[in-house]
Image (cartoon, rainbow, N blue to C red; front, side, top):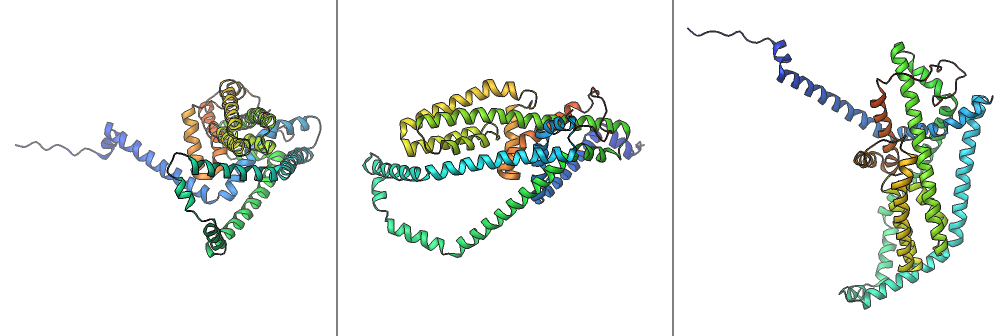
Length: 373
């Protein structure tokens, strides 16, 4: 007689080893789908999300200055205005210096570039490679006609309209950035306290600790990166000026801005400086510029970054590269700039989630300084 075995219950199937793996896999899939949906929504709202993130990063960098002013009796509104106007004044001063330098040296660079291009064509024509005949067959008049036809075509018109639309979005995003940054500087601590009101007291304590950690990490990253970028810009800019390379000041400014993109930013800016030197001053000066850029990058990687950024960013270089790739795909250049500090904050949240509180809880005080204190 065949023995009839009872059918296993659903609870038993879900609680054995395979069932637990299946449940965990389903949870991971659901979390992944939710994360993809959130990222997609953020990308669609990038005109708001990017100014918001930039304002958070800049507000964290300026928080100690605002806290210093408030501790000396300056009202929160006045302190926020003072810091914001100081930042805008510095930005306007740098843009003005760069503009005057470009206007003064641009004719020289154009003339040097024209001469360098003619020398390059002559070298190709007389060189051993069999491409000189191809250059001789190129008719400059036909190239001019093609350029004229393209400028007068509908494709160029649609591209110009797209450029105008992008400029409008850029101006709108910058205006939104200034507004958000002002309110973060003025009421950032109160905003965070308001968001923590619905949660339990224990979660509220953890939220305050994570808020302080976020502001400290972002502020330390921006200030440390600014120090490293300033050293790079001064060293490379001084070398360009001593070597007589045109546009030394604008190139130094590009080096400063590009240094906010880790690993690849300063190298790309150095390559641009070497190309300008190659066109304007010849291969010897360009080689010297390359040597200077390599030396500065070595100094930055081996000495400056471990000292200045060791407390703000504790990420493996592979994690930084992956964060840069993801940030560039999602947000372009701005995404590449924001990727590393966001990854550093995410890792800081994971590390300090269950960390005991060592900072006195004073965020409920309306006159309390920002969360960096």
